[in-house]
Image (spheres, rainbow, N blue to C red):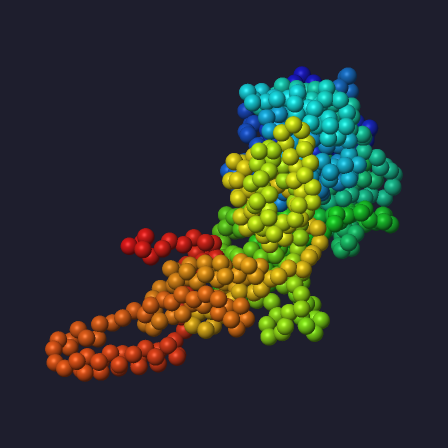
Length: 618
């Protein structure tokens, strides 16, 4: 704890000129959470005995994976030249899938600390977050972290940062979040460089909701950034988009634990509790105002995030469907980027079609549903949204292969395209170009950021990168490459729907929309996988992959054979033949009335790719 750390200023009485709102932006694993921990310790709002690593990361899953998923706001006191300032810091995620969290955090701030690892340099997400901050017109404070590492090269990367944002390499601060070196100077720099918030103190209250969470005891906790006016406890407030009114039961700041106060004034960042249990009442991006004297204009909200990847989520036990609906409602509150709607599948029953920002987002949501709500789930293979136009000029948006038009001639299929930025050492350019070309990518540009780092820009179909593109990129570049992407519209693609038929019947859960060149590979792979997973029946079961009426791959599950000749130990061959013919007739009849039983485990394994061959089991 620094001698310059004091007790926090009481909100609502704080002069806006003594408030600084800033966030920390960086690529994943560049030390944002560690630096935030050090700031909490130096400013004294977390005692040494209470301190733990990743203090602001509240979820177990964040600690286990070492990543930040949710932005967290915290208020810290800091003294400069005898005057005490209130620093409102927001720690943001670094992964591309959670860039929506970052964009909301930036809208609540006037400044941003651009954190770069002194051993790795600028990465793709560093650039993406920097451009987001510049769009929001924020004051950028460049900082090199992890300067205590043996592999650190602060001089080289300081030049790289100065070249990127303009300025002098000497202005780039050198800090170590681990040891605390340079952190006090960084807090001083925040006070000097980040502008104070601007607002009208005597105007009707206006506060922007930038985040919210669900507390099972207290209901919805809404995090706001005050812009104009003042909010007090026991005051009636109105949500400007829904016109719903509530009474403020508690108002306060996170320091970093919730601390009730006498109100929030201009420029403050804090929380409101109204006791509301309906999660739809508190919408991220909405404006909160005073019910008796409402503001005339709402604040400009956030643009709604576009889902990039769709997947079906189904409860293994059908009776868990209402629990899953309630769980998704609660997660939607703490994750505004999650989108979902009910859907049914012939094979899997009732569930939800969910939209995610990427595969990590999908993985985190399903993991949270399992842990926090104790649900057993099946998730279908991820797919992306397509615009399909038929010959009679009807257009259908397809987020699920089962929605793909059948029985009509397809005129055109538009698939989503992304603009991808890949940063890597120059030695790996060939491997990256080969990977992008195999995924139908088109190169836009190649720029050298320094002597040995290259930024490659590609246009790629989203469907080609949502599965294993990132893993392939990492393995081909020995972990050095970083990827960032953003939507870039739609383009026509040569796409087809591959159906998997069991005994002539299509199983909707296994269908997929793939590029024509990869249809055969997908069909063969799924047919072989199902042959391994579906138990043998009394009759032979054909597994076929088909595009429309054309079969492109086939496997067969051999029938279980009862030895009907066991009792026939001698005599004429015709007796044996007669018994075999009788068995054959019985199997033919059974096949006509029988349905193929596909066990639940086979669905889970086929959709997750977790297949163990029968030979290995033996």
